[in-house]
View 1 (spheres, rainbow, N blue to C red):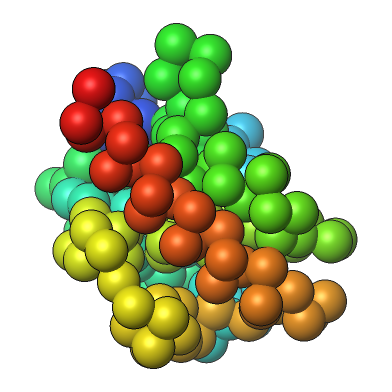
View 2 (cartoon, rainbow, N blue to C red; view 1 turned 180 degrees about the vertical axis):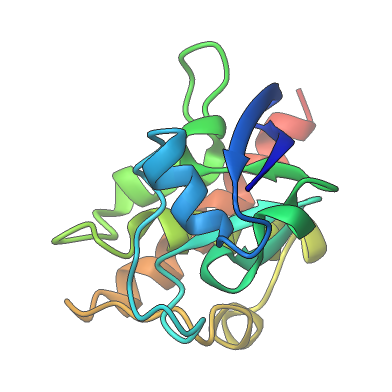
Length: 159
């Protein structure tokens, strides 16, 4: 066991954990940030996606020791001052979820994608979201939500 200071959603949080414990486990079980979901535990489904230094990362594959060196953003950290992020708003507007289990990972993956490619084509969206699995099959609405978020982000930037 060791003590780690994690920068999570802009807050410095101290946690005691084994250095090999996954970031996913620490977020859910020690910090009670349950928006990050356990899916496959192998980095294949995307349900556990968080942003590490702005990049889409599977938290089930990252140790808390490694994560302690990064800026971590979970789904709980995307809204600012009670306002949803453009990606969150677009997912809501497009109804891009059914059961919601994959949603936080999808939103964080899309956030990372739009940070790298501000106006992706549909092909780039599909490629960029590869590895995020939706058990309900709402992929067409997810793609539309990401297109909408791209437009919303562009409108927000022009104001």
